[in-house]
Length: 54
Ligand SMILES: [Zn+2]
Image 1 (cartoon, rainbow, N blue to C red):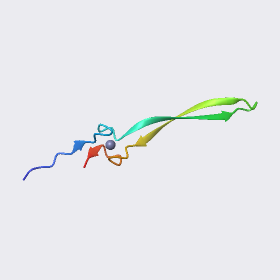
Image 2: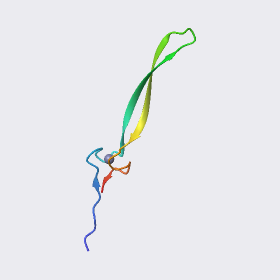
Image 3: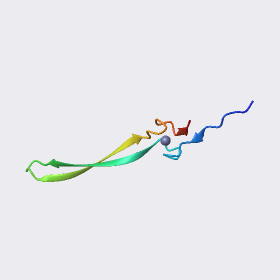
Image 4: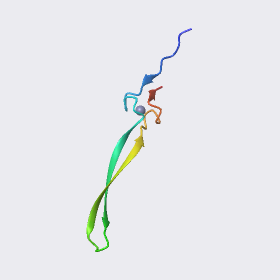
């Protein structure tokens, strides 16, 4: 019997996803525009967030 070795997903390199940065512009209390950065985790769509190639 040959054991199946799971391989790292080529799309994310086994990282299970990537950290992405989203920019938005909000208004402060004085009505001036303020740039904000939101960093969020985006699961890999190729492997579904498992980090493994099927
Ligand atoms: Zn992946």
